[in-house]
Amino acid sequence: MAPYYLDGPPTETKHKVLLHFWLRPARQALWRPRTARYGPGPCQNYRLGRAFVGTDARVPEKVRGFEGVAVRQAACGGGHTTVVLEDDRLFSFGYSQYGQLGLGDRTDMCDPTQVYLIPPSIDAVPVGHSGMVAAPEAAAAVVTGDPLPVAEVCCGRYHTIARTKSGLVFTWGGGKNGRLGHGDEKIRAQPACVEALLRHKAVSVTAGHHNNLVLTESDEVWSWGWGAHGQLGLGDTQDRELPTVIPELSGQGVVSLSCGDRHSFAVTRDGRVSVGVRTSSGNSDAAARATRCCLHVSSPALTGWSSRSSRAGTAILQR
Image 1 (cartoon, rainbow, N blue to C red):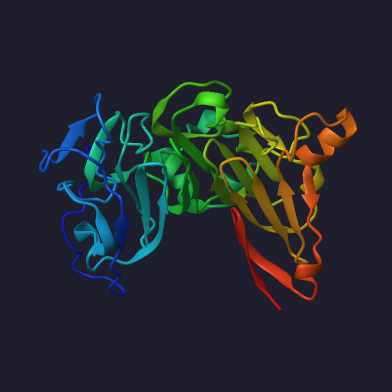
Image 2: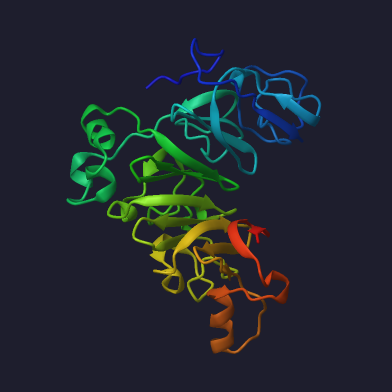
């Protein structure tokens, strides 16, 4: 399927949204063609969505491809960016050494380019899967091969994870440590459905540097990828190549998840905050397991507060 380039505003939009980016774009020549193959040398990746990368952006600047377009969400990875529009289409641009743009190759891209999430074949969908069967648009997409509408996207350092409106989970990019959840460490330059979650309708996804968390409709939290620091919350420091349920969070009413580089956070419906991280080395086996699981955080500083959501390293709280 040919890429779709968002070169200008559509004829009709609900409202006007200007997407801005700033900070450091890349170091390379003053001008490059609209796409550039990755090669040796410093940071050639167009992470700010423009072909001119000779100077850093020290203040927010418009991404011209999105002027006048209704944008619902944007997410940043190590050097790439993804954007979900109000019409449920997904676009990406920037660094793609590991295929994290999801465009079928490992080519850096300065133009926002549409990413297609193609549903798995009918044979791959288990009978009774709530996400596919309950959503008419998803079932129709299986037959027609049309891309699925995207609800949410998150970026790791070298990979991307997305959730469709029907509750399917797709991953692509670098696969080291099993971070894509397909049972291997292969690089995937196109979005691939995580088959281990086909029977579970996802309602939220988040990505750390090299790991992922998914919350399902059945009130379970699934974790996989790099686990060297206990950030998977599974009681050890092993990597996981397939999604695995975190027992301590099952049925706890989790409403928000967040991943950092080496730690993870969860917020429950009653305002409790849980954290998964290895706090130290050299502990006894029992103590070490405790620090690698999801523990409830109790602090006098939070007395009288309830947690509404979290971001890695920071919780957004309300009285």
